[in-house]
Image (cartoon, rainbow, N blue to C red; front, side, top):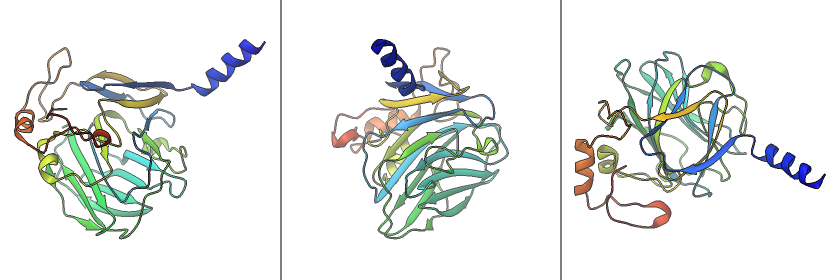
Length: 260
């Protein structure tokens, strides 16, 4: 009886699919609109943030709005929300305050996107495919709360929930990294970095609903990779190796330069 009860508790505890793995060469695939398909990410660092950088790539056919990156705390369901409002417009929300960014988009093309914000100045940036959009200012002096729920595929309207099928992501997401500081522009441009809050090489996650993990078919320049899913060496990869500041900053440990 005790063994059966233990198994029941374990099944409840691990109702999602939990893992921690190296996701290089992989993508998260969300095949259809739902209100229950998503991935939760566990941060390597759990603390209040005075600044951040989030970088990832997306590939989608959607023309409607959808959530790109949702970071909720008990203080605010939209502590950080990176959202594509419509074709040509993205928004970044910090602590419930939103600013919008206009961008010229190429249809049916993978997008490399980075969002940054710092408390001291309130400066918020979005970089699209290595190019900065017009900067905005918001939430000067604000601090992001700890114990976040980080979700890909859905927009959190409550802490860890409140999903709306009309805001769900459909397509592919990959190379998700996050830092507790603003990444220097030269590193954003060459795309050689590993996050110290979220790291695509050592990702702890749970997946729910009808989503899957598949080989990454696009490199950072929008070209096909090999059939095996191994990413081809690009100019950015070669440039990364020449940058003395390109180091693994995971948990503050510096190591020799690598590519993603």
